[in-house]
Image 1: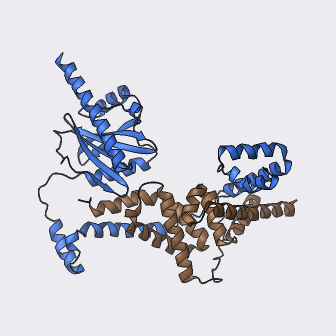
Image 2: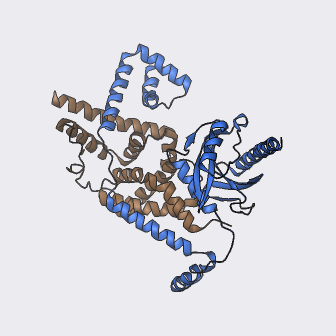
Image 3: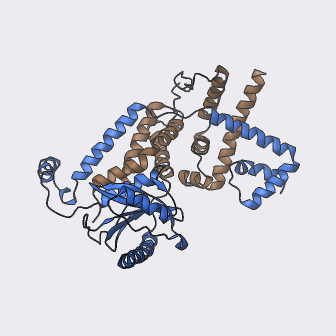
Length: 176
Length: 258
């Protein structure tokens, strides 16, 4: 006899919802747009609930992020045909700036140039970079999430980091 | 290893993703190659700036609220969806569901769902135990001081199950002891309470969402083990635990008899 389904939904909340912040951040960086990201996360969470039986313990965050990643790709193919992905402008938004009053304008400006640089990376590099730098996932976990070999993860990550390094180098030259 | 080979591995080295041998070879090259050392230093600095820049996007409050509402709905809907309702029309479900829910048939309490979610919460929380000790001479008195009974606290470290500690949990209105063991990378929660407090069908083993739940009796105590171990491993743990708990019970009976 299976345990009650109400308990299943409660367990799902206990397992998946602690990772909502990671889920939204990934979707937000992939979609580059707040409204799209919210739709993607909502769809992904419902899909995760539906497929909760396929979760066999293990890293719940990686499990949820994989569903979010796939949902984001499906969503963009369906709703944002190639070349029509709008930056929603909040890449430059005051709201997106750090709210720490102690941070200097210079640091904010640098943070913003990094934010723009990441937003402009090709999607396949951007998702790997977010999973590595923001979620600290291992190459193996990232490879599982994007369904590619570890070598692909390594090369995409390196190229993404090369871009950011070039931005930082350029910024330093400009300010000196 | 050539300079070019090392170059292609520096990101992986930085991320601690190289095996020991390759990592040592990279380090040996870094000691001699200023170019690679400088490259690595710049990389570290750039990634440090990325992390320091606080570029995460916070979850919009509106999305959190929407999801809570939807999951709440899913929960209520699923609770009504007993299989025999499946074929019925939605309106009928609402009408009959309300009627059926108003009636409860007498049957022994089924704590399995509660135990599963308590275990998941404990595994996810930063503090799965209230008393942190691998020594049953510490854990047992603590539990006795918190509970109206003194549960067996088997120590199984020699068999690969490290005792991490214990906490007190509630099953409905009953206070139970929760012993926490670690086997490999997996946590095992063992809930223990006296048979006299409430009976429980001894064959209620179940599983859900990657967690297994297994019941046992040891002397005058009920025990329920919950873990994401495989069914075989958890069954083996149950045997170890039960054998040790039974030995403890006969020891204490012998002690009382003296």
